[in-house]
Length: 203
Image 1 (cartoon, rainbow, N blue to C red):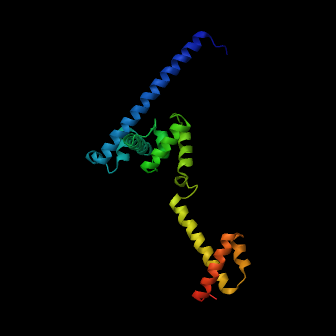
Image 2 (cartoon, rainbow, N blue to C red):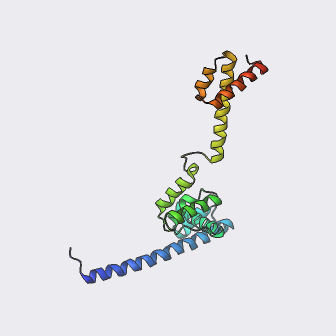
Image 3 (spheres, rainbow, N blue to C red):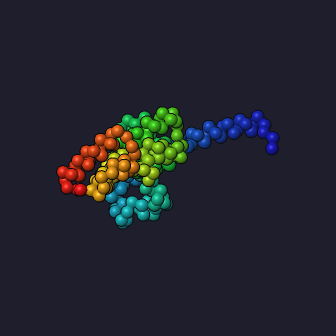
């Protein structure tokens, strides 16, 4: 297939037109989400004999139930980010999806990451990747920092308890050091625990 200058000009024109229409589509999606959110919050759908916003929107306008919720989520996330003056806000509904499950401050952290890493121009896939990197506990990859700290403390308590139980059974310092690894600090800790074992009657 041969491409002429006329074809190239038409293609360039279509790209500009498509970009402009996509911008309007995004802004319209945001406005639709805002309207739906207001109908939901005020339960206006009851006036048309419906029990839920999703079934009202589907019956009245043919909007799929799942898409109704996504449009509302898009508006809520956008509004939240705007109020917090985040350096980046989602430009469409798909970009907002990974942010819905985040707390407000977590969204700001993700926005700052996107602004720095992608210059504020991120795809929906890049937004999801940013969420996974900034808030991995939200994607099931790891726990929240405070949860991780509690788990670490619990593990240490368990190890110390096990060490004390070992001291109650035998006096060999090597058993304790093998559990934790040799170091001058741990040798002092063993001597302390050994003394505590005598005082507490563990041995």
